[in-house]
Length: 213
Image (cartoon, rainbow, N blue to C red; front, top):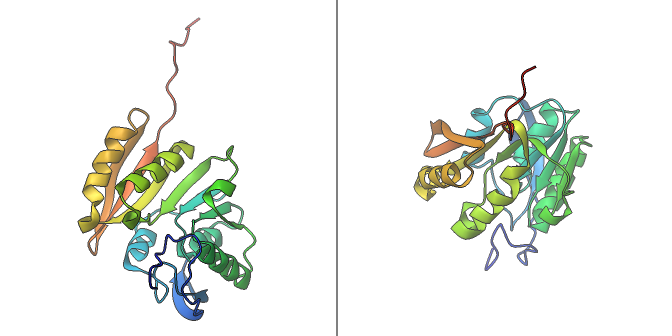
């Protein structure tokens, strides 16, 4: 990859398209990946842990995958919830192109592969599922979560997978201190050195006592 990272907007490295076989939403699939994106040769361990330790996605509404890469989380959600609209968000144009290729190959029309700035500002999400880009650095990661977690619908959940030795526990503490009140966060699962964090956005309490007749 040379100087490219999976969070490079326009990778300069050769594309080197390749086909891999993966199981998503209970289906054996052949999908296209490429150089210059995250985990191009396999379904990475963290994403596997996330997919194995989260509940079924809501059947409708808008669903969000932050840092989609070539699309395993987005594709899984779109397959499982054909009446929902899935937003696959990434800064890497090559990754977004791969999501579109893979969605088209599966006949999925309910995925929007988008740059962050192209997601309509008025949308809120019934769930967020993400293997977030930890290696962008703590400041950028925090900015990313402060952008998207507030866009959860009330009484909805975000599910994040983070490697334990890359700061999962400290991220959990930061979320807990940053998003109070109105949110809760706890460790929902631990597997293969990864933590799955569940972030719940609760309903907004009334700002004044409700009058009782």
